[in-house]
Every structure is written in C-alpha cells, then in structure tokens.
Length: 204
Image 1: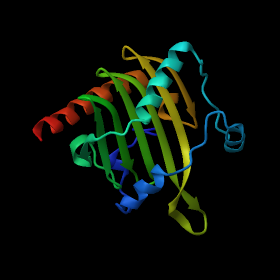
Image 2: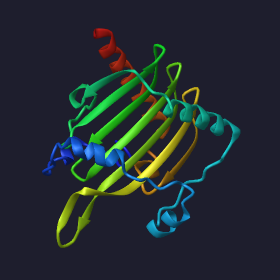
Image 3: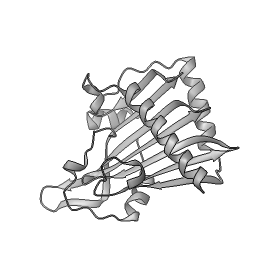
C-alpha cells in the first residue's frame, strides 16, 4: 500500500527478513523533486504542484519535526499493524514529544523492494505524508540484487483539516487510478495507526 499497492497474496517469493535491508533503504540517497537530471533520465514526470503559502507552512512544520531528537517512541511489529504480513516484514514506530504523537514511520519489506511512509501529525490530525518505494535492482543475467535499490516512485501529500490540499509525485503510483483516493486512504491509515500506537503505549 505504498507507491504501489501491496497484498500478502502476491508476496510469495523468497525474501530474506534481513534488518540490514532496512538500514540500506533508510540511508539511500533519494533524488529531490527539483533534480531535473533524475526526472529526464528516469522518465518520471512530477504531478502538478502548487507551491502555496499553505504548503510552505506545512513544510516548515514537518522540517521542525525532522530536527527533533525524540526520546519517547513506541514500535509495533508487522503483525500488530499490517492486515496481511509481507515477506520482508515491517515495523511501525510512533515518535512522541511532550506527550503528543508527532510522527509515525511505517517500513514494509516486499519481495521486490521496500516501501516507507512517514505520517506527520499536529494535535492528532494528519498534515503530511512522505512516501517512497525503492525496488531491488534486477539484472537480466544475474537476477535480483537485494543490496542495491532503485527508486520506483516518491510522493509528498499535504493535508489541512484532514483534507488533501496538495501533492507532488514522481514515478507511477496507484493514485493514477481514479478509484484510489490518497485523501481517503492516508487519513484512514493515520487514524488507524495512531489508535494502535496509543493503545500499545498505554499498555506499557
């Protein structure tokens, strides 16, 4: 359910549940949206993006959260938040500051790569989702290399009062299909994840 929708029914290939994969994907150098070389060479075309004052306020807030050194966090294992467990496993981490849940990080390992989504929250409401899908490098002669990633797609989604106000994407994603609504999906997921993280925190 990241840039490409995933389902455990399709996750039947051999995939090593190796923690190093998470480290590799976390440290991957991702292209910026204004990197025209990446756009031209990859063939990825960004969606229309309006650099409005509203979006800039959200980006400033998100950047402040990114700079936080969180001392309080709660981590859920894959079976605690995924409806269908994937081959590569997954984790969900909630980060707290002054008693407020500010960020939720989802990491999911798939047979073909890794998806990551960061949900940023303000007073319990979703304000931003940053997602990436990094697929394993596949060579026609040698096969799949699990140590090398190539970015398949990336998306930034901005919300106000749980309403999608803007988005920018690179690559092909499931929201190109009209029946898939990023506002509905992400608001629903953010609500679900917050509830499960708070439940886990209150039990400890």
